[in-house]
Image 1: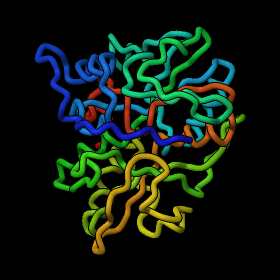
Image 2: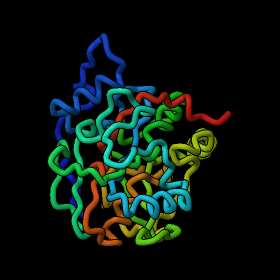
Image 3: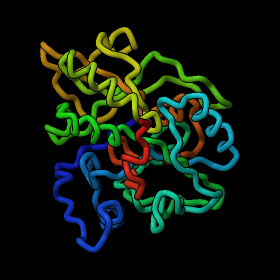
Image 4: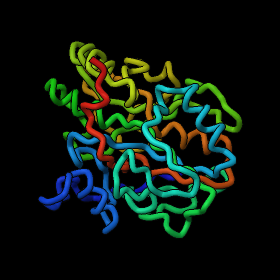
Length: 276
């Protein structure tokens, strides 16, 4: 799969209308050309990964998500052919409100548009999955530094040798996102993110990337590389980009996803997802 070119523009460039919720302003910005990482955009609001599939595959994919709740926690599903998901945002339009999409044919990305109006069909079902950007807010609140936010790049993501539980044509490797921490901070990060099972929850692996099939941590499969200092360990969380690896493995004839790191911003609040 292609790795969408990073847009050299900071998420801080987004200047939401004072009369709109930050989440609504972010979606409006997408409709008018915002095409950069949504990390740090609309703070406090849940962001989601996106997978859009023909109705004939929707039941199998739904089951796949149920069997693999760590990488694929569902937070919203559209009705067949309906681009709206009112539970995630009254004005939300799944066809226009993601900064950049990936259009898949036969397991390959063939186009990366900023809207999918031309690709929308009456038989499509949209799945929105929880995103680690939600628990990042909780990590920052605990003064735990997040390297990709500090450097204003996309989080690094990697395909692993951890096999997902299969469902129908959906089978393949789990994708993980990585954030480096000093060991004491890594322990605290485990504690903090365990409270957010709806957005991937606790890490799936700490340290030793080669043991989960990552040959070179400096070469992520998606997103941008970040340095890991000598006194830090890489911490890996299940990632909602997993369906993209699975779509590639299954060579599906048609699917649409978000571009990694460029998410759907919803009106849900991150604090609503916390488990006390």
